[in-house]
Every structure is written in structure tokens, then in C-alpha cells.
Length: 115
Figure 1 (cartoon, rainbow, N blue to C red):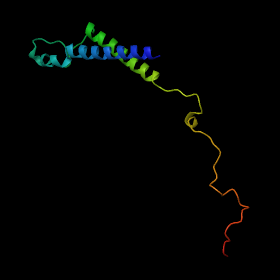
Figure 2 (figure 1 turned 120 degrees about the vertical axis):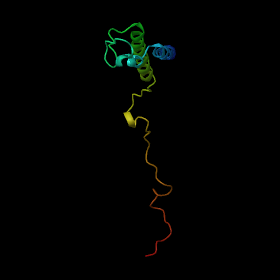
Figure 3 (figure 1 turned 180 degrees about the horizontal axis):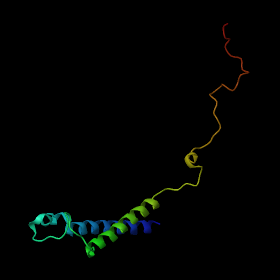
């Protein structure tokens, strides 16, 4: 089980670093905003541009994001400590009630109670 957790941690960290790198390398849609207002010479897109089909980098970013979230969910599932007891009462130890010292012996003569 620990080997599986270790492999999931490695895949999780590698996918996180890869997503960060791919997001930073991609060309943002906001960079073409000046061209949308006529500064780029004949822009045919709207304010945020016509994206068309996604390229390799955006598809690989989406796949790596799915891998990252899947490994996060798997790690959280594997880290849950399971108890097959009584739920919230599973950790409670039942014991006989204890009587304070001498309270159970009512037949002993003790000091007289003034009336």
C-alpha cells in the first residue's frame, strides 16, 4: 500500500510541475486583445479572438490537469483511516460505573447526623 502511495505522490508532483510549465509556456488570449481593436491589421476575431481548434499544448495541459486531480483524489481516498466499529462511538470504551470510595457501604455506622 505504501508503494502505491509513493507512486501516486511521484505522479502527482510530476503532473503538477508539468501543468505549471505548460501554462506558463502557452500564449495567452489576452495578448491578442490589441489586435481585436484594430491594432493588428485585419483581425477577424472578437474581443478574445476566435480560438478554433485547440493546439497540442492546451490539450496536453488538460490531460495533465485530469491526471493531477485524479491522483489528488486517489491520495485522499488512500489516506483515510477506516474503522469498522460503531462509527462515532467506535473509539469509546465501555466500562462499569465506578462508585466513589465508601458510598456503596450504607450499613456501616458512621457519625450521627444531628436533626
